[in-house]
Amino acid sequence: MDAKQSAAPMPPESELIRIPGAEPSSRIDAWWGLFIGVVGLTIVLVIFKPDPYARIVQFVRDGIVITLTLTIVSFFLVLFVGLAGGLGRLSKNRLLRGVTTLYVEIVRGIPLLVQLLYWYYAFPSIVRTLGASLGIPAMADYRANAIGTAILGMTFCYGAYMTEIYRAGIQSIPKGQLEAARSLGMSYFQAMRHIILPQAVRVILPPVGNEFISLLKDSSLASVVAVTELTRRGREFMAATYMPIETWTMVGLLYLIMTLFASRLVAWSERRMQVER
Amino acid sequence: MDPIIQIDNVHKRFGHIEALRGVSLEVDIGEVVVVIGPSGSGKSTMLRCINRLEEYDSGHIIVDGISLDNAKNINAVRTEVGMVFQQFNLFPHLTALQNIELAQKVVRHRSSESARATAMELLAKVGIPEKADAYPLQLSGGQQQRVAIARALAMNPKIMLFDEPTSALDPEMIKEVLDVMLALAVEGMTMVVVSHEIGFARAAAKRAIFMDEGLIVEIGPPEQIFSAPVEERTKLFLSKVLL
Image (cartoon, rainbow over all chains, first blue to last red; front, side):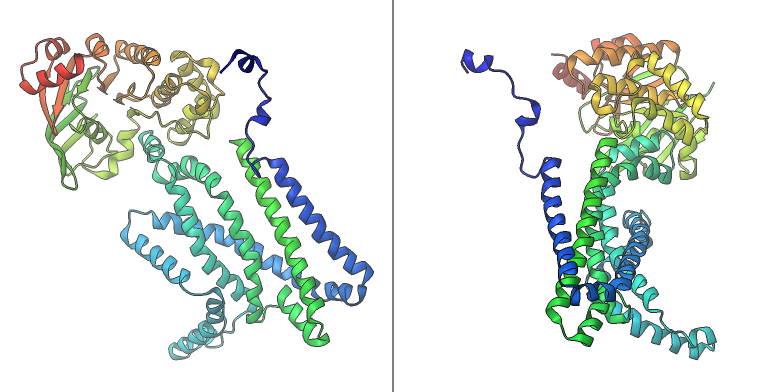
């Protein structure tokens, strides 16, 4: 190193490391560009070609509400199932560990579509047969509620994925943290609540965000179990008008707007967590 | 008066390895005991058995009159026994102050004001009151370890266990931690210290213990253990450590 070089002023810290996509600002730009493009295209189509695009939006509007309801309700339930499952997977109790492991392995191995069909068609039939043979009228007359079944099915399935995310997140916290907490006299659950989980949440936030976006997209599968969500309404519109290109272009754009918005929400909460440390 | 720690013929194995092969030790109230020995000799395992961070396979341990053989007593004992770790194990998502306050509130059910007052007092005692609002990663190793000591002291333990408290520290930070420990010893805290800091042992300890292969090989006053050990294995180990 010569004298001239070492005498040169240090570049500002912001210029020292340049990892593409690492700077929040560049992420914002990419996202805003896409978001504006997608929203812009949607608005242009609706305004300049109201027939059929405005008609489609009008037609599927209630479906959007149901898609969002399905996704958000399921997601909150999934957060709890995943926490319980993750703790179960890490439990010292063999039975608890066995049951949760079995749950994860079974659910992961069956397509969500098949699971939803099972909950909607097979499960009520089982309940009715059981109710009839046991002489319980409430069970014998059981009929599946479409939205309830879809929420149940999606929660059951995504709960298994979330279980694994929680498990990995909790395991990523060094063992010394639990030992330190326990050595101060905290119970296992106090240590989890105050020490392990607050740290694990930071670790699992990105994969949890991905699960939310996946769940939003997979809620379209609920269309096969008589839930009139966005995809189902799209199919109904297409059946009535036979305009496949227009229908599915619009439905695709609507999903894209929702998922882009969700991914922004995830990035925002990630950054907030980091600042909070 | 009964010894505050009674360890009686404790065995512990990890798979095929016998970490403790019948360890017995009694520690009196106010006594400082320093444990030395090669790595894998069982000294950390013995220490961790005293607050049951490690379960033992057989034998008995009684701490402050409470038997540790029964798992139900674990938390009762742990609130009486403070522990300081080699890797500090501070909670990285909490400030120094919050690290010291948390267990006081959650375990001891103290009010926020009283927990805070105790925490500030202890931070002053370990010499870093100005670091109250710093997060662990903003502190040096020596400062982190002093916060960890304050965190343990906040529970008003009757016994303090130190598991190689200075082994992960840079040389210039060892003294600041040892000074805090020395002050504790002078105040009459019962301490079991796994450490190879011979100077500290000579200054603070009443007894030094040499462990090897899961057994206590030799116990005696530090002067005797370090200057005139009786056992061959102690001599061999010290010749490697002291040079």
